[in-house]
Amino acid sequence: MNTEIIKIILAFMVLINPFSALTLFLDLTRGYSMNNRRKVARVACLTIFITISFFTVAGETLLKALGISIGSFQLAGGILVFLIALNMMNGDGNPVKPDQENFDVDHVQDSPVSMAAAVVPLAIPMMIGPGGISTVIIYSSQVSGVLQVSAILIAGLLISLFCYLALMAAGRISRLLGDTGLNIMSRIMGMLLAAVSIEIIVNGLRTLFPALV
Image 1 (cartoon, rainbow, N blue to C red):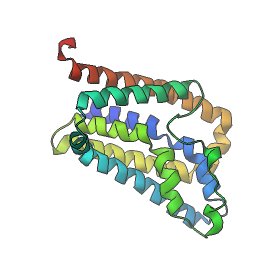
Image 2: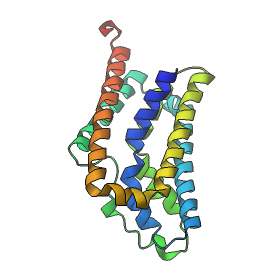
Image 3: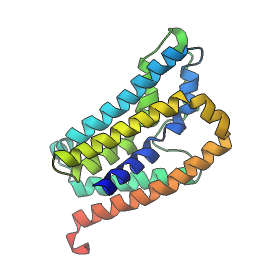
Image 4: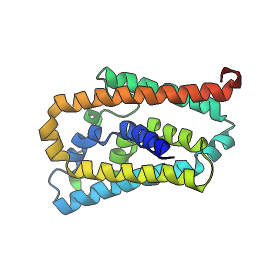
């Protein structure tokens, strides 16, 4: 169980990757007081945890309602995650997450504090997008019992807390690492994510074609 939690945390870490949202967070909260920055970070990270919790509990039910088999979703999700990893290793970022440069944050700062921007676009889809949601559903479909579901929720809580700490240290991290450091970190996470995606694809193939085992 401990190994599974570590694997889930690793998958969430490289998919959610709060470091990719640091620049957007700094832009959205430019001119905010420290207290208001904390509020934006809390709302964003709470949104991440709620999203993970919802798809952990209801993800498999949604698949059944849509008539999608677990094996098919695992295979499709694994391919999606692999494409994300490939782009990250090539330095192209996450293809299913929006480019920060496409966001116009001027309208966000028309009001003193915008909590809506903490949900969209900061939390969704900047930090947890289709790849992250797919991975949550895949892992939740592979477990049964309260303890195993709780493991995913605990992993989601820990990642949400890590995202909060990363956002609150956004200025210092950006100055410390710079664009080059963040780019190197993205490539390393892409390599780790590629390994996770292969695991998902193999599990999907085993589910669809049991004779392969």
